[in-house]
Length: 186
View (tube, rainbow, N blue to C red):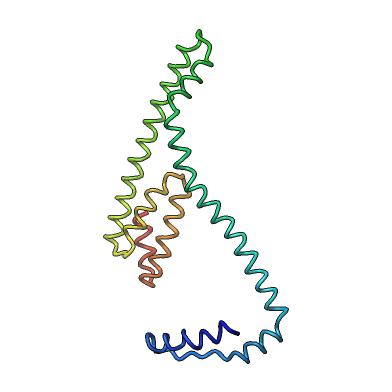
């Protein structure tokens, strides 16, 4: 009740002055309504609390990971040469030449694959962006870049980009034109 009285005293004049809204909370009616439906209100509040608790734990985990990842990465990069030297010392001397050759080949092939994948992603992002812009989509840049980058995950990236582009086209144009344009582009 004190919060509602404070809202009537402070919030209502501010809303009236800035937005032209006339708002007044009837404290007695709200108390009566809450008292009559306390069981329902309590269930709703419990659900809200449990949802906030789950979301809060997830948010704290995300923040901790965002703060912890750079620290771990820094120390990992700092100790990388010593770690590689210790790992290399575990390889028997008679097998070091073959293992070194194998690891060098793996490194080279993975490097080629990742550079190729990045080139494909950049080319597709450019293609989708330009094609959607020529088709008249307002969201051509974010949709094109997202679809091009998401192609990294086979089928899922393409499918998600297609669905998002169709949704954006239907919302923007409201006709069958986006279906034809997206079918042509994709």
